[in-house]
Amino acid sequence: MDGNRLLAKPWLPGVELFHADFSGQAFGRHSHDAFAIGAIVAGVGGYQCRGQRHALPAGTLSLMNPEEPHTGHAESQRLIYRMLYVEESRLPSLLGRKRLPDGFRMLNPQDDGRVAAGLACLAGEFERGDALALESELLALLELVFVRHGGLRAARPSVRDGGATAQVRDYLEANYAEAISLEQLADGVQRHPRHLIEAFRRVYGVPPHTYLLQRRVREAKRLLLGDQSPLAVALSLGFYDQAHFSGTFKRFTGVTPGQFRRTALV
Image (cartoon, rainbow, N blue to C red; front, side, top):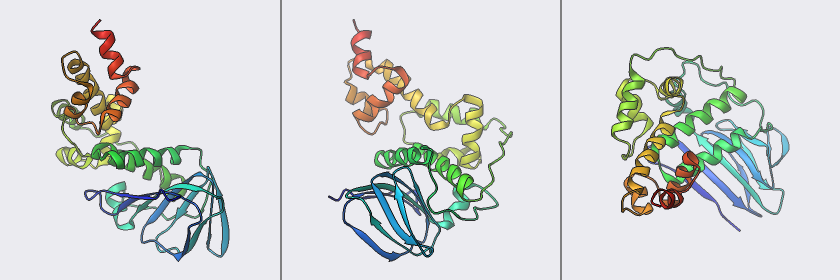
């Protein structure tokens, strides 16, 4: 069995997500030129690093600093894990901090589920290729991991707005069907992406990518009352496919697009 996938986007250099699903495969001694942030989903993983042998059951994180030599293997018949690789040179622009993380001291701390859930969300966004959602999930995950385990101080909320959030909201309202990136939004109002997310959430209660999805769902309701099929509506509003559209629609309304259409047209 080999369900390994390495996910990357050309517009997000220095960032990769490895989804591993295998049995019997072993990795010889090697290192990565990036920070590695991983979570064991199922089975038991293992490696040798820092002079010790480590066993990692499900619910354990695997954290590595750049150029840290280690081996890798599965200690169970089947092993599933997700591993995010972020090149060290990308951290200043991604985190928007003057002081960068010290690096990971613990290799495999326990997870309360938030990092594993963040990696799962990130994998889904890599598959869908929605730049705004992917970049937003990435920044949130990096902030969480490096504050908890990398010596990074929690960021102080910025109170500066200057009309930036209203400008971003107006842009999302007018361009809801377009492919929009977080970098594009941040550049438009001259804010760092992380600062923009914080300010937008403080004013509107949700981050920009959630606001955009809500706006698309609102428009979808109007279109579903016409003669367009759910698939046509999904594609016209920038959703990855009908399943993505249906899941998002139900998340915000409690019903699927088909259910909404049937009851609304009775």
